[in-house]
Image 1 (cartoon, one colour):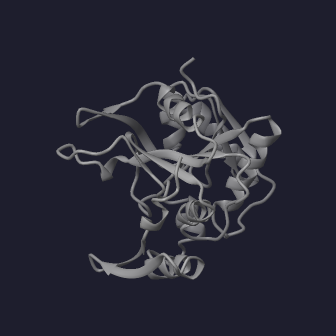
Image 2 (tube, rainbow, N blue to C red):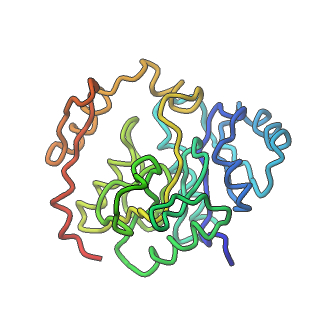
Length: 259
């Protein structure tokens, strides 16, 4: 069995014309759900036909245009996975073009759901790993050496989440960092795999999604950074790098969290 054993969800809004993550998963023959809002149902139905996608189930969320970020839809996917008896679930952004295996410094595109299955097998070995997922492709340089995984840091965009986690998605900005930090502050663990990579597109280059509903004031990165500092002032600083504002999180204190 090469497909993931846990259900896979994509949260998507206003992007029926691209279907980037779904197209990649369909090519890999990975069954998955797409969480959409009611007004998007027909465009997404049409997109399944137009792109020839298979193994896709559309799930229509009972809300629309709320403007408070993707957390509500991600929590709804979480509840759906519990309702079908799953112990964990995957939740993915809708702008991931490809998935890769890092092997001998070569980033090799994966064409099978075994990409997810191997991470699940590692995840299931431990009782206190509550989130795991792959590193971004653009953070891995072909001429550098990396450990197979990094424990106790933020997990991005492609997340495997244990369903009995007591924390849920919240807030409009930096949701993945916030969820990771709350788990780490409970002395639990996260796993970021360097051996597996996701090819996420750059934030704000696509319309739809958060670009139109959360980031409506443009690339307001200082607001994003200050929001995280307000949530986690003990480990977060607001810094300016490359002429842009960023949040800097100190994860060193979580090194003591043991698998």
